[in-house]
Length: 423
Image (cartoon, one colour):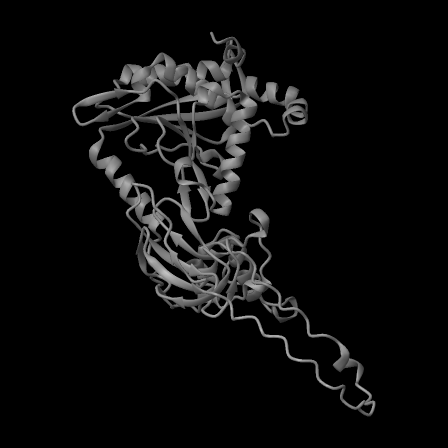
């Protein structure tokens, strides 16, 4: 039985994609459901499964080509016909025994299957000449991520201890260093190299949306600071019991999501969006959480966040973070949303102005918790403080509402009992 290999159906918001990797080669035997190729779009990576058992007889589209939904990219033919049974032959005379060396008796080692790897990791491995068989994957199910290839590259290029005669001029690279930076190791004074690479679809889409947000919205940012001592004390008191009962770590994000939902209920214009000359007020609370992934920034959405308790919020965020690292987020998990929260504090950011996520009208920025001297009841004390920022579309949200919205979040975080009591 023969079958065509076609591009999966894209959602309406995705027009085309790039075929980044063929996982199988022409002539390879495949089973129904085996992943044959990866197609990258500006939102997610789609995997192309084999429609039938057989042999991948034809690859019609090369890696790096642009493909459309439903396009034929290959063909699978039926497996070779089974051999017919031969009639029994007369037994041959017994051969003279011959001593076979022990080495010849050992069966040939089974060929090790190629490890599963993300498209970005495969591209980088090909560019750097790294065999994926030598890379240990840290993604879900042992998948090889781009960072894994970078670590392997840096490790392979590092000089052996006995060969080091003087301190290196270039500091060792961190695992998250890009391939372009990795190529700058070991340069001689005066060299001025450059490396040009094409933008991924996701990076190009991120750039497009950020420019769109600044061009179309009257964006303004207001700041405040939050005393994190009450939440920190609460976490320290119940952390072990929470993790034991719910099987998930208690972080700061669940407090901020819960506080943001309460503030959105009080200030509905922050949960609204502009459509032409209309204002669309949303009667639901779909909160996007900005997550860093090997492909770039993605914003999976907590649907109906007002119906989730803190354990549910933490579990959903953990699930999305794992999917983002493995590149398995579905298209419906990263589309939509009425409000966004981003936490630059996990990378050490002390203060920033987050950019809107169109068509949303506001975004909350969390930052690093840092101990600072503050005044309390006429006394200077040391408290764990966090700067928070709210960027908003001034066309829809007035400064008074934006400031009051942020103060509401501040008050709820500084008195977390109010989150439980709903006051």
